[in-house]
Length: 113
Image (cartoon, rainbow, N blue to C red):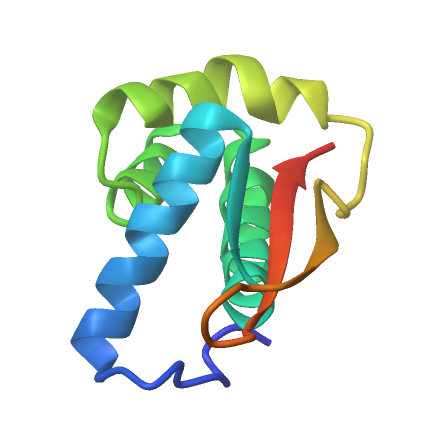
């Protein structure tokens, strides 16, 4: 369930970070981050893709309220969501890549399948 990890930030900071990371993931298809952040981004990105599978005004406004770039929203509705039309979830993959040099945080790559 998204929103259960606090990630050491206040609510507003956490929401802004997740919005930015989901936007970047949908724009580029792949990001590298810590494992806990990747798991949170995965939940939110899958919700956005599921919402975008049905293209109507209400769903566009819901997605635009979360994603920070309008062109990414257009890409989500025209390219990404139709690709997963026959799939019931599991649109992203989180792959562990080992500890980060410096503080040893577990790193992961999250990507669209």
